[in-house]
View 1 (cartoon, helix red, strand yellow):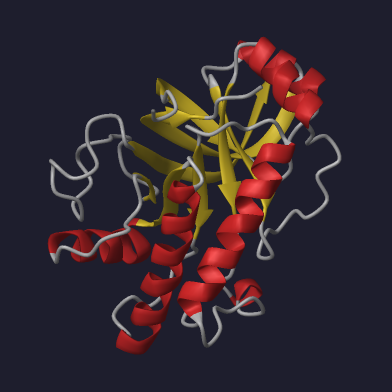
View 2 (view 1 turned 180 degrees about the horizontal axis):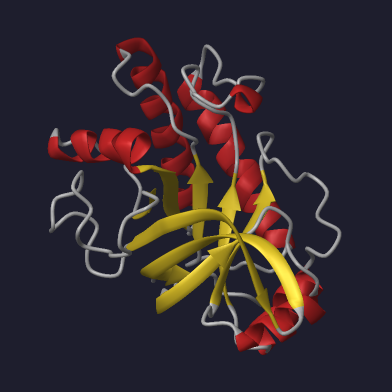
Length: 242
């Protein structure tokens, strides 16, 4: 029997370091009701996460928040961001993807994130037109997806619409297996919308399998607390927390 999947439709924000439970309580004054948290991965920018714990997860869920777990693992060898070039996918991408998926599941479980939850692999923008790089990246992603799915979680994938998401859609149309179950696409500076993304067919990743990150690195203040966030619109699965 497959684990139950819970979905949420509405606005979400993500921020590099998980805010304190008190800040999350104050941010209930915001229009957001879901939060993206970076729970692991060797490519994670904010490695120090002083607030992130099983207790924090339970507390914010009790406050009414839904959680989107993000894992920043190894990155494409043709990644654009300079600060991500230090964690490249190696010579055995499928094996590496599988190993990092095991790590993701272990870290998620330690935070009380149960099977049936999405785990989003964060793959920063890369030159998906470079065949060798695209091939190794896809193998890594597929290996990660298969292992995450095998362990009862939903394989999610975050990337730029004009690189990783376009690459996944191209692969989907080609009939490739072990692709993500949920996509989180970044396209900033456009009107937020889940079904108007030009690189995705209308029928792809539906129903309730899409998140659109439509703005990034913006400062917002709610309940007397200011955070630097990315803004998202979603209709997708959220974490099930013990």
